[in-house]
Image (cartoon, rainbow, N blue to C red; front, side, top):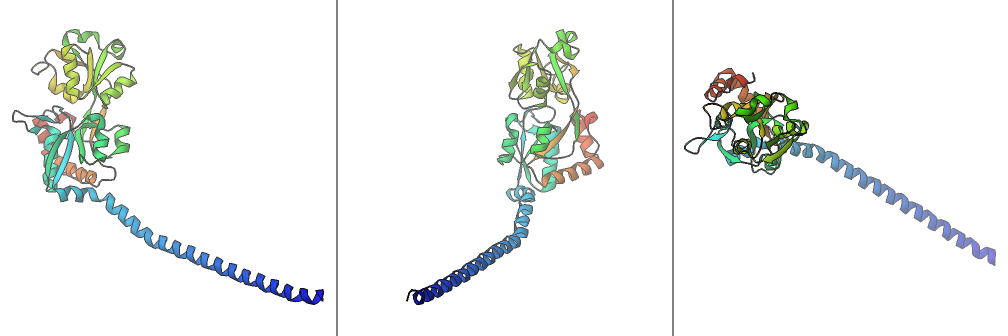
Length: 292
C-alpha cells in the first residue's frame, strides 16, 4: 500500500516542478523583453537628448536676441571701460561692445560687477559676458567660452614717482605692501612673487591706495597705467616701473555659448575694415591691438 501511495505523490511533485520551470522561463522571457524594450526606448531617446543638448548649447545667441539686450559685466577701468562727464560708459571695450550689440540688433547694458565674482555673475545670467580688459588666464579659459585675444597687456608695478628709482627689479619689491584688484592678474602676480598684498574691489581703488599712502605700491594693467598715472593724469605723482609678465585680453561668455564665435567674426571684420584700429586710436591703445 505504501508503494502505491508514493507513485501519485511523485507524479504530483514532477508536474509541480515542471510548472515552476515553465513559469520561471516565462518570467525570464518577460524580463528580457522588458529590458530589451527599455534599451530600445533609451536608444530612441538618445538622438532627442543630444538634440536638446545641442539646442541648449546654441541658445545663448537666441536668449540675448529674444530679450533684446546684451548685458556686459565691467569695472571702472580706463581706458577700457569708464564713464564720461555725462555718466555714459565709454572706452575701447565699451565702444566695441556697443558696436557688437548693434551688429546683433540688440541694446547693450553695462553692469559694474565685483571682479572676483565674474564667473558666478556670468553663470547666474546676471550678465551675458565679461568685457573689461580681461586677461586670458587658465581659470578664465576653463570657466568661460572666450573670444580670441584682441589686445596685448602686462602687469606693471605702480609706485610714487619720487621713489621709483628704488624699485627697478623684482628683488626690490619684497618689503613693499601692495594693493591689487581681487581676482585679477595683478593679484596672481603678487601671489607668485610672495608679495604682501591687500585685495581691493577695482584697479582704480588700488591706485587710490597708493596715492593715499595706505599701500606702498600697486600692480595693475599696463594699459590702465598708461592712461591714468604720470604727467597730465589724475595721478601725476605716481608712475609705473617694471613689467612683471606679458598677457592677452579676451572676452568671456558662458561656457558653450555661440556668442564667442559671433564675436570672433565681428573682431575679424572690424579689424579688416579698420574700425577696430580707429576705435583703439581714440583711447590710445592702438599699439596693443592683436591682429585678427
